[in-house]
Image (cartoon, rainbow, N blue to C red):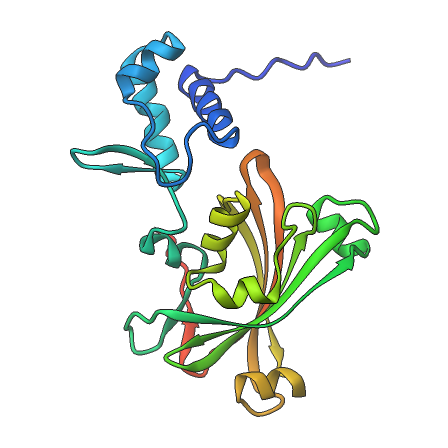
Length: 242
């Protein structure tokens, strides 16, 4: 029988893991500064260069943000620069548009087989489902159906969604303490059904992009399953591979 060799983890990756544990525990909240490299080096009994390498990698993954002359901060969805990280829809004319979320429904349900599998829940566990339209320049462009673990997002309601002025991810972060740090997406072409066509103000049968997203928080824990239908009459999906 073949022997399995232990996996070697570089020291800076071990320090990165320790910093991630502190972030997950809420030691430093989104938007707050973390200790200096010198302080962290002393805390973990490693060199400042090792800490710097760990922080560099976390900054490249949008977990931390370096600010010249100010220090290193925990990334936050409240930062306007974070908005375009998870929404890759841009106008065909190349401009920049801010979106407006228009909540339609928010209700509690029990997780079916697919939602339970995707969100790592048990069959029948409570979930919260949100339907909303995303507008750009007052035009409806996206219809989203969003599935969330019910216990994690207890208290989320249509009233809360209507009152909040920022992005959904900013709301999830500030009110429920859930920060999305990465996501996977599957994209395919579909035809608009009548209900979606009415919401997006396009003809029934018009081509749409179906974007299915699973978003994860710390610990690689799935906390959102989103199924969106995108109108590409005046927008395209942009993915920078650089």
